[in-house]
Image (cartoon, rainbow, N blue to C red):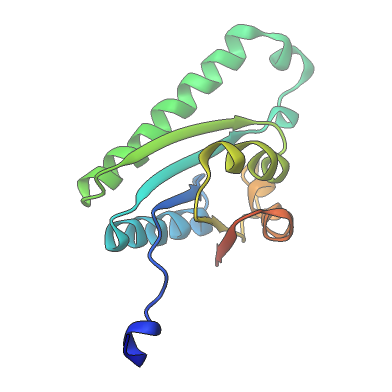
Length: 150
């Protein structure tokens, strides 16, 4: 193996990306798509339903929770279609519920078994701020490498 060959970056087989509608998460998604296409890797697109953002009546209403989940699934399917349009052959969706950082580290990553987690970190407003503010937690406790996109 020559020196240049040994300097090539690792090729990933499965990339997990956390998405929401914030600019940093969109940037992370674009990076993850480009990397998945380049590596011919599987792309797993994840979003977390934040139960803490619901009031008690919403959380107790199965219709509300199922409606929110169905809406999130439709939204993630748009991400999936885009990834497939740019040429990624294997795209999966996953939805978690609870605290974003903890859910990603303790539930999603062990289930998905990715080579790398790609997340954004600058979200500042609304429900989406929780995902961005959890980037440090995920970077610290994730059992896989984390790429934080800003």
